[in-house]
Image 1 (cartoon, rainbow, N blue to C red):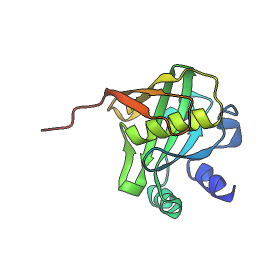
Image 2 (cartoon, rainbow, N blue to C red):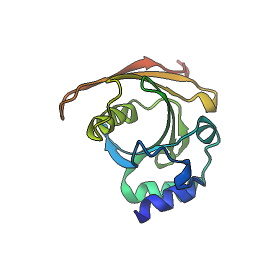
Image 3 (tube, rainbow, N blue to C red):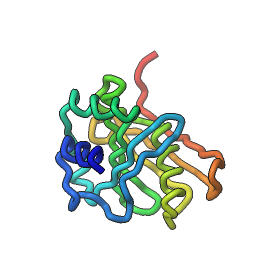
Image 4 (tube, rainbow, N blue to C red):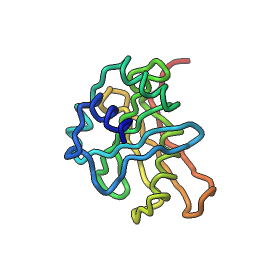
Length: 153
């Protein structure tokens, strides 16, 4: 719990900012992520953090990203993915985090849809749309597809 408190403090998040329907948990989609749901789109849009402090916290737990999400509906999530561990402030499209989210939702017994869309990168001007499909069985494959921002040839 002390680790989570440090992460929340670094992102200037309070317990009241968090969506109680989604507990904070580590998740794995090829690499390790921390999943945090906030209650409001505004909180997500205003995300900021001290890069070096968060990088050290991520390195401590071997995290690739911290997935901060807001649920617009059972079929649509908005996400920001700090990627300080990789030397980047934020990743505009994170397929591994999308797969980890599917496993997380399955593991917490979420009753929403098993196919949903994640909009990521919007707040950094690089919108991506990830489509995620998953089954109810542990170990069953997860499908992640979608559109990302064109970078360069």
